[in-house]
Image 1: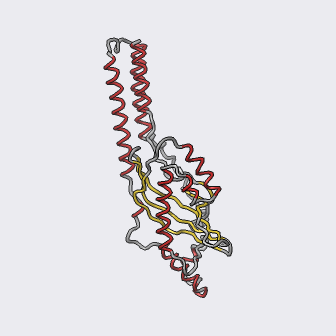
Image 2: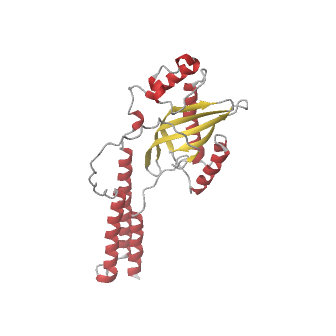
Length: 291
């Protein structure tokens, strides 16, 4: 009977040590869904220059999570087998000792999890990496908007010609700052609705096809969600329209966290939106998310 208690305590400790670090689930569940569009200029084809065969790179070391889980699991499992089959090391162990072993394993698991979460939060935040430097996308936006208002100048900007593989055509009266401010606000609104499982609110912002996919993803999440947007920036990277339909693509960058799970990660995604121009005051609807 005593050995059975020891076995149960060890199995509990091993399961704690080997548990993966939790991951926050933001809106869209960190997956690409729906429509996608090219939002960066096509790269030139690689030239056929002779190159020396690269030397084989050493196999990457296993992640710390796997290493720590394997090491702890090996030690605990080894102690369990030794106790059961090879000796009397645990012959006089008391039930309180079993509880202490389980408690120590749990504390060790929490320490490892905290260290890994700290490492994730210490990664550089690229959202402000280009602060104070010229923004090529902003230059492209200004050039394209000027070209839309006056077709005589549409070919005068070399950068706009180089980026012509990605459409960027906005009406002259398009309120770009106001649109991007609304895009940031809508992102946060949808994250709150995702946390609260408010599918009716989400349905107001997305197409029918995307809503069906998002609904299925949200049903897979169990328990309360606590994802919080720490800071967020939005940039228009694609725009086109015709008589019936307008399309834009918004690039989001920032940071989000889940204080309950101890997770903090970057926001790097692109939302594709469409607007039906044949209907008066039709809203912009999200039709695709790329992450």
